[in-house]
Every structure is written in structure tokens, then in C-alpha cells.
Amino acid sequence: APDIYHSPVYHAFTGSNLVISATVMDNVSISTATLYYRVTGQEAWNSKEMTNINDKYSAAIDAQYVTIEGLEYYIEATDGVTFTYKGSAENPYMITVQEAVTGSDMGDVDGNGAIEVKDAMMLLMAINDRLNLTEVQFARADLNGNGVLEALEALRIIQYVNGSVSSILM
Image 1 (cartoon, rainbow, N blue to C red):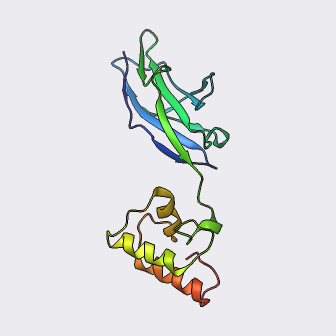
Image 2 (image 1 turned 60 degrees about the horizontal axis):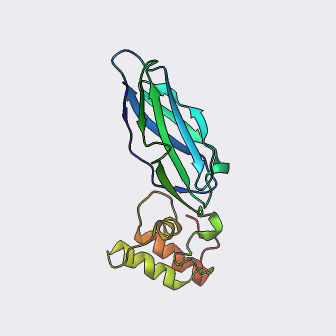
């Protein structure tokens, strides 16, 4: 039977496609690798044949299925004779989906609808390990989108609040 090596996806954001990938290998060859997915709570499974590049199989779940309700998925591979599964229809992987952070949300770390000095303070506290931000708060604070929170981002929030810059984005 084929071997499937997969790191599960547990979190996603609305508004974009979600790529699921796995390494699938067999001593002879792989006939197909298929991704099965559905919005949490739905009965029917959707399926997509995964594309192969050097034993790395992947398929993208269309953004229309990446909803706040969440997603469930599993992977099936066959070598033409036997099947192997990662997850199953009875016990699928579960993905929690959160609202995507839009450009208008950037800088509003606490999510109260206004960019304030408090947002800069939360960012600085997080940088100094005094506050744990949620994923959404982190995304709102990461103004330059590099995945690292920096004091320059807190400074930009303060500059925006006092009117010395007209755009929150860096």
C-alpha cells in the first residue's frame, strides 16, 4: 500500500484558496491521490485529484468552501491495488476557519473598530512577551506582513493615531 506523509492543516482564513499537500510514495507507483473535503456539517464530500510533483501531491480547496463553519478533509492514495488513508470519512482532519484580516483591519490589534494607542501598546507587550496575541490579533499587528512583530509597527500605529502618516500600511 502507498505511504502518505502529511502534516495536518488546522487553521485557515476566509477569502482565499487553501492548499493541502502530502508526500505519497509506493514501491511501484501511485495511481491516484485524492483529497476529500467538505464544509463542516455537510453530508456530501467533494473530491479533487491531487497533482504530483516529485512525490509531493497537492490540491487546492476553492475559497468558496473556506467558510467560518470550518472544513473537514482526508486524503486517499492508491497504487491501483490497495488504498491508504490519512484521516477518513468517519474521522477527518478538522480545520478551524477565521475571518481574514483585511487592509481596513490592519493596526486595530484589539479589533474594537478603531486604531488607538492601546493597539500599539498591545503590540509592544506582545513583542516583549507580556501578552499573547490571538492569530487574528497577530495578523492585524503585523503591518508589513513579514510574520514578525516589530517595534517599527508599533511606531507606525502611533504615527497614524497622531496624524503624522495618512496610511497605516508600511
